[in-house]
Amino acid sequence: MTDVLVRPASMSDLSAICAIEDDSFPSPYPRFLLQRLLQYHPETFLVAANEADLLVGYCVCSINDRTAHLISIAVQRNHRKRGVATALLDRLLAHLVERGVDEIWLEVSVNNREAIALYSKSGFARLNTIPTYYSNGSDALRMHLIITNAAAGLPRETDGNRS
Image (cartoon, rainbow, N blue to C red; front, top):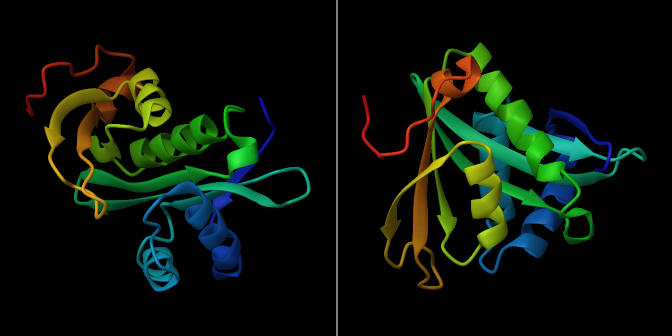
């Protein structure tokens, strides 16, 4: 596992975030959208930096009342499978617990097996498939985690029903 420092993102990180985004997705978010996400979600836009303080990953989520939505998580290609995404997700979930958030939702490409495995390992339940969700026409898998259960060590939701 790579030692990384997970911290809130700043505007000075934007170019590195864009480079990670461009390298990670077939239809990357444009710079202006990532900038807006950073402006609107400064507490939940996190970056992972290596020992040389070079960014190797990021994640961002929105919060609406007691519900969060994971917008994006990405790790630089040569730092994947080293625990960076897990470190980002763990830090994000800890922050959401502190904020009193009860649940988090996400969508992930049905073809992104590594990400689906990461989310499943973190306790997310698979809910349903959304046809042609992405701009390239591929389907998405919607996943959900009840954060309060995960934080308390209780059984996690598996049937997809909301309480």
